[in-house]
Length: 271
Image (cartoon, rainbow, N blue to C red; front, side, top):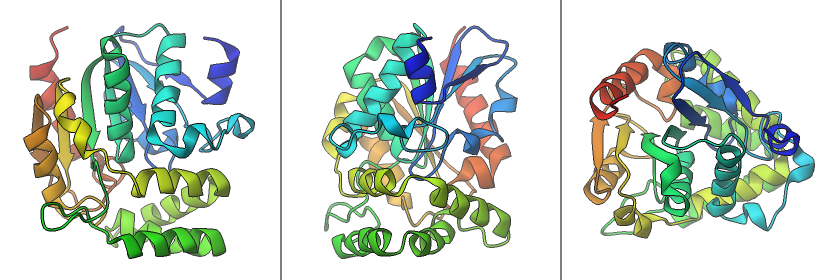
């Protein structure tokens, strides 16, 4: 891999298998959030982890406000990593907004993907009543973005428990809050706008790659109806409603997440 892309996105490659399994983190997170899942797959797959520019241990000097003002810019990160590794027919797991980023990358270079695994996805976080309940009113998002600008640490402390839920596991909320705080504030603010103010519902019918939707049973970020909405519009999708609550089942309920992914891949992927 070219040193530039590898350093820029802090790319990590391991595993004993030949088929690539790419894991893409969500907003405010980094590749470390996948640590509970990857051990279950590393014997059978080549695991690819990375950080979007502005997150984790990525090269913040590579950040470009214009490029990352839309999710298409993050999809370019994904494609550039796959190109440098010369990967095709990968299984791509995206958490939250990365589910849509993966779909956008597939639309541009479909030959690089065989399956999308969408963990707590949403194509639009804003309510578009009466037809669509995304979870937030525009005023809610504007208030959140304003809090990010004025009190970044306060924003992290406010959002982390809302995202993680599972109050019986406070250490997970603390970890997510720490992850939020470690993100570059400028990059985080612009990623938040690109995420929470976007509407990619119109692309769903075009995304014909086989896809698994993992919908949590109680998720304030991506309400239950969002999973149904996506399943109805993604032509080759399967929907699994999880017992898991919150927006980060790969962290809070890794065993259930692993089992559902394994079950899907056992029937969907023929190696």
